[in-house]
Length: 101
Image 1 (cartoon, rainbow, N blue to C red):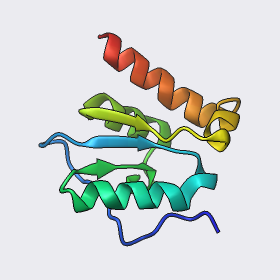
Image 2 (image 1 turned 180 degrees about the vertical axis):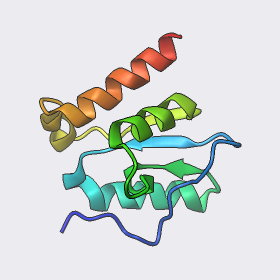
Image 3 (image 1 turned 120 degrees about the horizontal axis):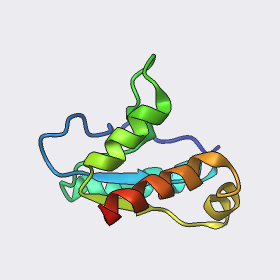
Image 4 (image 1 turned 60 degrees about the vertical axis):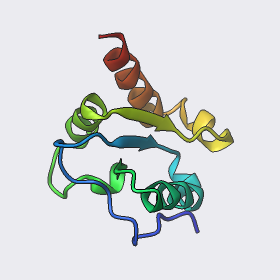
């Protein structure tokens, strides 16, 4: 199973610096482990489980990328393979645009 561990709650808000984590959903277990370790070290972490139901997915992701202090992409074969799909490639593009501004 590749689902995220639900005990790690994504950061809510924009009032403090946070880390945006991009990952392939097939790597959900590994992403959960990394997110858990970051949170145990008191880092605020946002990832796509923080998208509120009924909100516009792409706008929500873009807003969180634009407001994050750090963007971490958990690169793996699955992530790079999914770069051919739109989600991870789009997240990286939004992050690159934010950095260049």
